[in-house]
Length: 140
Image 1: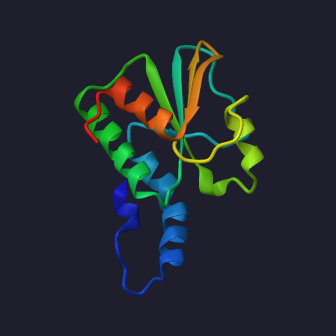
Image 2 (image 1 turned 45 degrees about the vertical axis):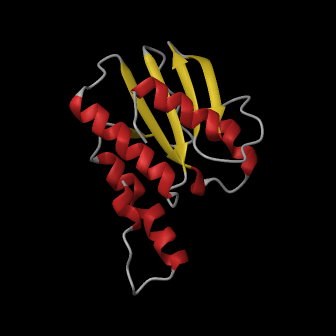
Image 3 (image 1 turned 90 degrees about the vertical axis):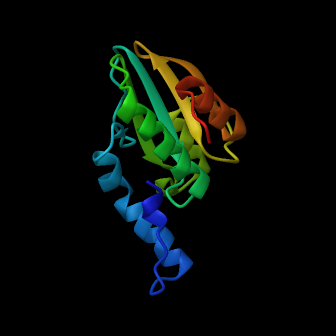
């Protein structure tokens, strides 16, 4: 996913960030993860992980690449990872649409764990990154 931010001398940093946001869904579609639009509800069966990242954040994209590498080596049959791009949220209160009760979010990523339709855990920033690192055995 980090390839979204490949340097291009013809683009300003703002244009590169915009291009990354525009291409994020297409890159996710080629991965073991799925995009989750804000109007969709997570399915009620099994374990669902929701991860919100900034498509212009190098650490967030590196983390997604590490998760994708892990899933490519060892898929998890009973768990689905859904993603959303926080740059698409016009207001910080919109995090509530994805993660009820998340409160103020100061740093990405944001995560939520649902078990059979019930939100079990949520976090943002460093706590969320640590949670993902532990859950997927990441070395980032």
